[in-house]
Image 1 (cartoon, rainbow, N blue to C red):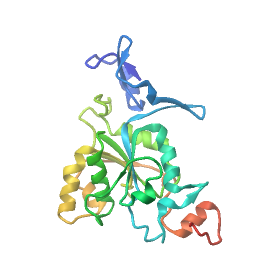
Image 2 (image 1 turned 45 degrees about the vertical axis):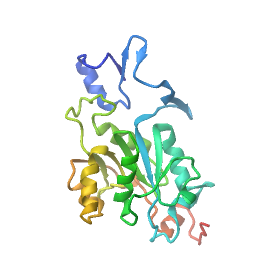
Image 3 (image 1 turned 135 degrees about the vertical axis):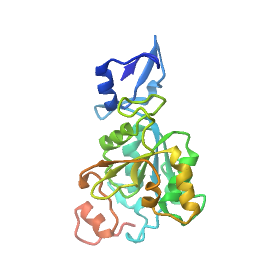
Length: 252
């Protein structure tokens, strides 16, 4: 969506459309506040990189799976690589949160270690948020083989003010986090603002490592979604079913 320089008054129809725009571009003559390299044609579909970063969480212990979930093969690539390829056209910056750069650094994306080990995904999110300059970050675990990009774009739009342009739906700066709710919160497939950092760090300092406890201290917008829009593979049985196999699979 293209508009006049900031400060101008929008028409009512433009205010109604603004919440559905992935980017709001301000133009003055031929000059626009957008890098047109962010626009691509991918598979016959126009894409535009969002002014946000993507954080891929690959630092978990995978205790229920019994092996590193990020490296499970899917269509000839590790699951982490599949996720990376799905989000790559849509984000300016992609980083991997992991303490194992040797295993998870093959994508070419920066691998960000936890500042303090063994504090769960909350620490991984904090360490990554502190390392990227973007105000908005989409966070996803490495066990979601299919990323619903339309859902992700919607979550980012609902985060409100981004790239310095407040959307009509939420002019007070937007929530601290936008989290899908599929019968339960999905905090590891959600959008966060950098301003959650002080709250999250306070939780970690007090020994509270659960994501739900951290979110209870933030202004969160929960977005109802159907359970099948976010599919996690937590166990080897779930991985086998996803592959359509009932027999034993050796992921190595």
